[in-house]
Amino acid sequence: MKRFGFFLCILLVFNTGFAQHSLKDSTHATGKTVQNPFGEFAYQYNRIIAADHSDPQKVIITFVFINGNATTAIQYRQEAMTGTVEWLDTDRGRSKKEKFVEVITATVPPNHIVSWKYSFTPKTKTTVNAKIKTMKVDKAALLILDDNMKTIKEIFPLIELQIAY
Image (cartoon, rainbow, N blue to C red; front, side, top):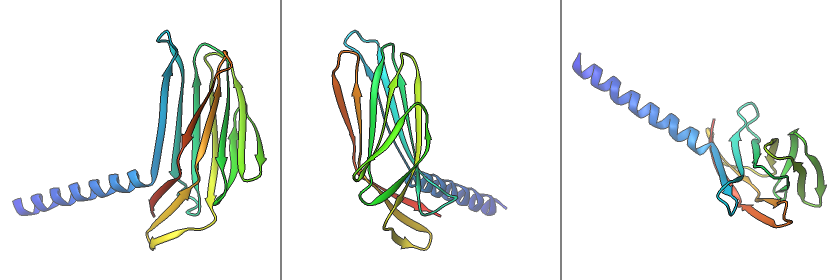
């Protein structure tokens, strides 16, 4: 009976580790919190890329911008050289296409949050095996224009996700 319990415990640890590994590989998140020169909160952004398990051919990207106590203009640019973009939620933003770049722009009032969501469907997929796919998401950029007309550019590099189905 003790062997069975030990075996069950090992099996549980193995399965939990595998589940965490699969979740880790099928998502990617990046973000940053910035303070102004006086040490006050200026803004924060987060970008989350997650597998769309209802459609294994695409990923869902959510971008959230939390503004500080000054008006800020932002522009998010997603390259679409190796895939296509479909906007799902464009809260307070105006989207447009510039050649191979999808762009969304907004003026964010003080202490407001903007959240955008879109799907990215790669044109080509690399299948490692029947249960794991490698999907590439083109690079993106965030341009931030503060109330002093200073522009900050943040680059999000190309991402490769290992997605387990």
